[in-house]
Image (cartoon, helix red, strand yellow):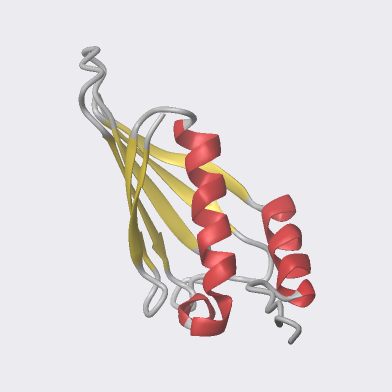
Length: 125
């Protein structure tokens, strides 16, 4: 009997992920001693209320050198199109890329708020 291989990410979704990641931009909106807020722009997605950024990322960090503390990163996506279960791979890829670009290799606790696609993750060095 031949085992079936089921692709978790369809070729169409992989193309959408690449399109969005390649076009993703962000700008810093706010910075304090312990936090930054970034507006997240994704091609084809936007805040339905304002027509602006599709979401934001908030990074809370420790400037005092305590390496035993995790950086807390929160991603809030405002476009309801990103709440649909069929785009979970896209939401995951966007959040993963944001952590890589904004936080790098630091230990990070991630909270993603995207309707049904919300999740928590832990990144360890």
